[in-house]
Amino acid sequence: MRVAALFSGGKDSAYATLLSLESGWDVSCLVTLSPQNPSSYMFHHPNVWLTKLQAESAGIPHRLVPTSGEKERELQDLKTALSGLDIDGVVCGAVASEYQKERVDFVCDELGLKSFAPLWHKNEEALAREEAETLDAIIVSVSADGLGMEWLGRKFDAAAVDDLVRLREKTGLSVIGEGGEFETLVLDAPFFKTGLRITSSKTAWEGSSGVLQVEKAESGGF
Image (cartoon, rainbow, N blue to C red; front, top):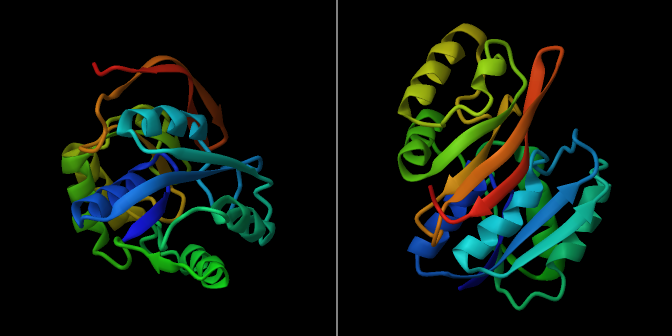
């Protein structure tokens, strides 16, 4: 099976890509939509420019396509990004978002492609623990009660998952961030040849949410 993976640079898209590779599929391209609107309904926004470095580390061709990030217009942008690729299907990292999965399925159907979501409806806590064990990722965006500035730059590891589970009991947040409570950046993965190292970053905080903005990073491990 020759597929393109929708790749945001975060843990879910990276883990879906990894599972596809482990299944023996040919992941021929990583496709990233870069939204101009940080409130995009469909696509991850923080530090999306780093997907270029991640793709280089993975040795997989990369297609970075800008999108307005406007609701529904994003569908046409996704269709444009996938058009012309020599693939049989598309892999996405959707876990529970019907909105996201239905729209990816719709675009794939229009293009005559199969749609795969290997994380779909997995137990959230179990999935979070799998990702924390398998990937080297940090939290780069937070927007939920209980997630303060101290979470920005925090490693997404077993201890972080434990804390998220405790917060879920109090506030009901998703421990994988499916509701936009937090976003992650993968610094290393089993299919990367070398890890990424952040050399310059800054924190932007407004109200009850914030972003760790990576200004400079390099591929080459730690």
